[in-house]
Image (tube, rainbow, N blue to C red; front, side, top):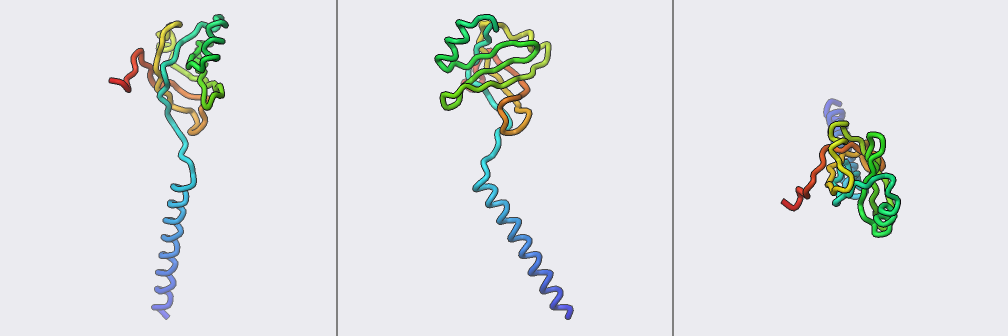
Length: 131
């Protein structure tokens, strides 16, 4: 009787271990990982009233951003489809961004996999990936 319950417990533990391993393997194979951070292409800061420049950048799929009430509206394209990301930045750093200059941004997404909102961790005037 005692060996029967031990046998059932061992079989149960083996079954649970098998199911856990199967779950991990299937998730690894079939579920696409969600991005949590982005490092941008060279991005030009554009004055919001400069519509001609904005239209030119949109036409050529150029990455650009517009400063708007403490938030940086970052415009980019993926598969020739325009996208917009709202980026939050500390006030001190926000005022260091100069219109007409090019920057690279290190962005932490607010929600993993959702590129519509993010927080700028840091920005650079030169491409640090090329150094």
